[in-house]
Image 1: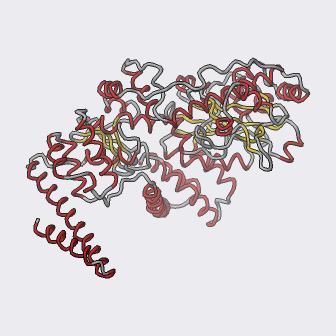
Image 2: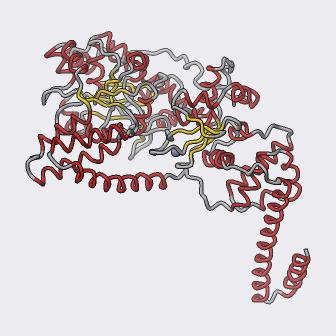
Length: 608
Ligand SMILES: [Zn+2]
């Protein structure tokens, strides 16, 4: 086969940052309360709005949205920022993508040349490009390569009943059984080796120079994200011998654009139908996804792994709250599904379960019984609580005390995860009845679960590194808040205190930025200020400060003078300590000239 030498157009796009002016217009045209309430119900609380934090587990709301300052902040996990920060977290976008996302909603046009923000974004785009080129190459190989192996691959798909149309829709491909097929092709297309390696498509040779193809002689399943970017590949062996020395399935490694467990297979095709039907069907593997698709089920996605991750569940939650789990009935499938339940419930998702006879998967089920039968099963899907309880009743003897304890022990943590107290109560009573335990005893056990689990959940939150350290010195926080609240304090502070006088590194960074903006005559408005920082720690510090209340009646000038005085005092204390240390060192080494000099300095400090 031969390919033209023409370089892929626009591989190295000339990208630049979205201008500050456009970002400002987008933020100004957007209302943070409106934006957030499109996702989560906001309740008014004084001048703020509150809701349960979408970014950590909680039962009482500590997520605050402030309409005046156009910021949000969570007192539980520390997440916070302006409307752009919210969209980056909620929609899993980077900063420029989030700005674009919002700009579209308020009809502000951002010219295409401003797609990039930084080096990393540029590199991500390049990996998407090289992945796409690889997907196209694999696809073409599958459709038209004359080699024996490619023919085998076509035969394999045909035998499994995959139609050509489906092959095209999912862009299935084949990687030839050679060491450098893809490598040569991508080199011809002018993709640099380092980039192809970063995309995980080639592997560096250990004993000699050069690289070789990661995927060889396998059916290729490109994994696209919701926006249609090709993020990774799954690859299935077609020969039994491959399964022996490799694995039945291999995957792309983790790259800049691919984290295992963050994506779902088929989502780009299914998302509009998921929204329309307000339901998603989750299956385990590639074939489980594309065979139902072929049979007319267009709201099916595959989890590609064992238990669903929190990231996957949040991705789903952007489109629907109704999940039907359709996993294999073998022990591995069941256990993966069971492990997903608690997280799904915790994330406030309505879960139901379809069970197939053991040995059946969605693909074989459709072949044996037809699409209508599967549809009926999905419609009759069992509620997650009933499913789990039935399963446990089959596993354990509910007549014996030990069996009762086992069943209760596994059900109580699940019940605890339902966000609604009415539901919890209902399930507790149902459980008591089914295993024949008094509701009093069950409730007592339930309370134990409550304390254990809430402790574990709060530990988990504390472990998160993005929690703003509360150790930040209060006076430094106080003065920063004052500066951000009232601009007239910027000049006053700048005259008296240098950024280096702040001990806290995050505060020092923010102050430096504010001083700079001030010098350049640019806006230091809170929402704009936040978008200047890429580090979430810095954005969270600002949003945290801004949601703390300053007493309205306070004499701010007096406060400011007081803060400045205390920081200066601190500075002198530090200088004194430093000089004392230096004096000691000079005495020890007998450097008398230096000693004299230091003593004069010390006296000067004291007289200040
Ligand atoms: Zn939170």
